[in-house]
Image 1 (cartoon, rainbow, N blue to C red):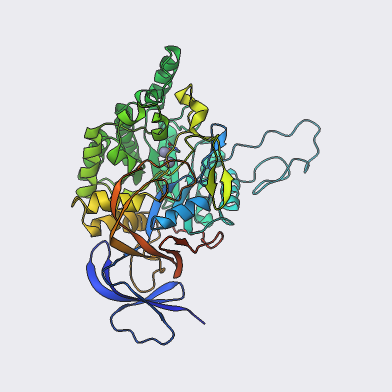
Image 2: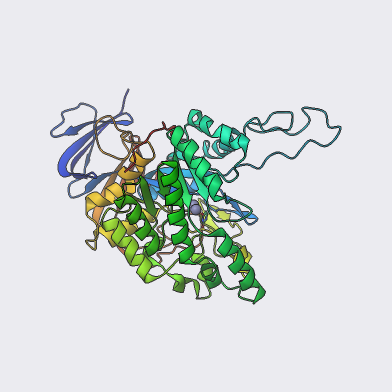
Length: 501
Ligand code: DUC
Ligand code: ZN
Ligand code: ZN
């Protein structure tokens, strides 16, 4: 029998409205929104004094990502669970492009090379994109505890890859990420990015850009190491903000010339926001995302002995950058708030307890003597909603409706999940937060459920926190209790041609 739940007396917040109503959930969907439902056998939850919001959608995570000889410490289970505790019910993860298979050794008979997903016995990947997606699905599907989608990293551009890009649509993937940095590893050259943008446009896909200047970084890193500058702050000094500003404008101009939409990930500079404004004032279909750390932290956080905790790429900038990014959120210049969640242990030699087990995963200590060996990335997926509520809504910088737009509705629209996700309307998935706006706590690693040994917001005073979280009608967070499980998250196949906001 279909389960029925009524959430009564709450105040519903959507991207456009705030109103008092009850929600009827039938099975996995919102069935009706109204008042005084008389339904037999329904469980009734009284949400008097509470806010009801759509589940958060984090458009930018990296679970189980191999890097620098280790791996990001949250996988597709632990990261999903941490996201859920923070009120997020959908995440979008990036699929790394698998390398080509090595050529068969001479005399090696066909069919003897080890086979994996999407691999033909001849020793050639039938499709590198398909093999990459299938590999990532094989990791994620059994562990997923909330719903999830994928973006595809296009980190090499060959005729074969170009020809394969349209096949991503059959796999439910409609977004591609390209990089202007990480020379020799992930970077594409401008002409290649231009071609990706054109293919994406032709097939209704959206291109996402990591904007930094790979050439300048390469030169500055070599100089820093040669002169003995190996401490964490040099990670920031060798990745200057001007390179990000320039690469944002370069990406915008390539997109304009390709007549294609563009989504700028993890925006981190005032100048980048200025370039976004320049583009949007000219009517270009360019959108921007930032993440909480870029709103609060600066290069100064990289200077103390534990500065490695703040190392990610692009790096932390200045207070002027923080302020301009806030302004971009407040004015609606920027469309989404993601996290770029990619955690590593600060001290991966000392275990933490996770679900009753001792866990230690090599982390930031790998670069104790050399900032270039510190795994890049931060924990944040569970912090995003509580931090932005207190610091954005609690301070009056954002209205509750803007908050829902940035953290749920806009990502749903831009990434082709709307109206299944990202709003509270009949027919939508019942991904629902009951938010206790009066709950006060001192936040930190004890509250965040990330599988790592530190939290960037340690000791911050928060007011407003998720009390209950529903994923497709299933109560997965009940106060401090985790009721979700591995495998209950669904892969979200998306259609091309999503909205440009
Ligand atoms: N930046 C990081 O810091 N980590 C993962 C990927 C990225 O772009
Ligand atoms: Zn990036
Ligand atoms: Zn990222």
